[in-house]
Amino acid sequence: MCNPCCLIVGYNTRSDVIDTPNGYSELPEKIICPYCSTITKAVYRRDDYIFTICFIPTCPCCSSSPYISCQNCMRHLPTIRGNPCRSCHVSRPFEAEYCPNCGTKCYGEVRNLRVN
Image: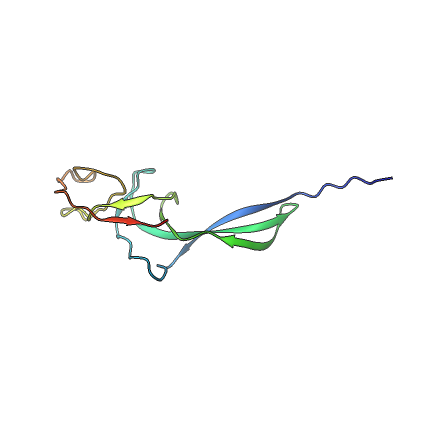
């Protein structure tokens, strides 16, 4: 006779704010998040994957590489484009001819800050 046994395994993800990693550039103080539309600070985050047995965390498996996220909604920001606005000093993670915060024209200023 065989006794059936069910073992549930998987992983959980935990996202932590980290200091600026070595070799990475400093982030702007103020950005406009394209997801939550707030003016907030960009932060570096890293995801930690934790192995679970029967929904009980047992040991860390691996970590993701650092990425830029919004401090408010914690969503991943792809690329921060352009220098901060000359009037309000807000950076934007999307292409814009005018500053979405104050409406000042951005004169072809280009600076890409990308973390893969």
